[in-house]
Length: 304
Image (tube, rainbow, N blue to C red; front, side, top):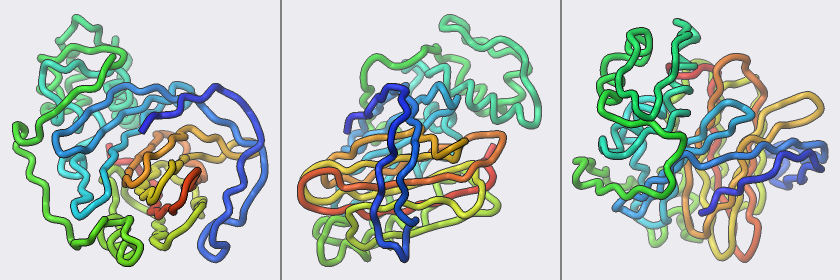
């Protein structure tokens, strides 16, 4: 899947038609879309792909993982604890540089309780200032000591999961093609993807499972939230699409917009410290035959 790096424009929002009893009332209105950049792409030995996407205008980072459909639709990042920075450090070896933005975001979230006003790391500086060391925690700081820092990785990195000692749990249900099985996929998606949390939020939450075959789905949070977590399956031929948005003056601000390869399941997570906003998610089947299924989870609070 290629991330769509869109220009900063304001245009007519697309009306997202779905089951009116389950999703939002279709809307037309002004929708602003921000441009995202790939910080790191990590190809895993089991066929999964992990991506970290920066959205500079919103000062945030997206984390996602793409899995081929089948009997083993399992996300490796679910097996690794911590925030985005901690997950990246545990997944990649010391020889792989760390995107600066992952450190910035981790410090920004920590500064909600303990502000840090010191310098950021440079590419040649592996020594953490004491205040940064305390804010990131001993474990994270120790993982950073021998790492170099960069703006972004210039090419994908391959990781052998066997060398990391990661054992994937068995899928909870066996099916011919997992979430994209026309007969049993609705139950497979519900059992394996609906109800998952992403481990980045707590407190008040909202969860919505749309495991039936759909062409377009849209769901807006009932309350203001700080974290959006989604999983969606793109089934059949042609691409799908996923968007994460938040409320803004006059409409919704779309800060993540990506096309999905056919016959894949993807999970994406976006979060923002500070003021909570109404949030919105949209899943669409863009071309070819087939359908999408989706799971949406909103959280009021962010795990620090």
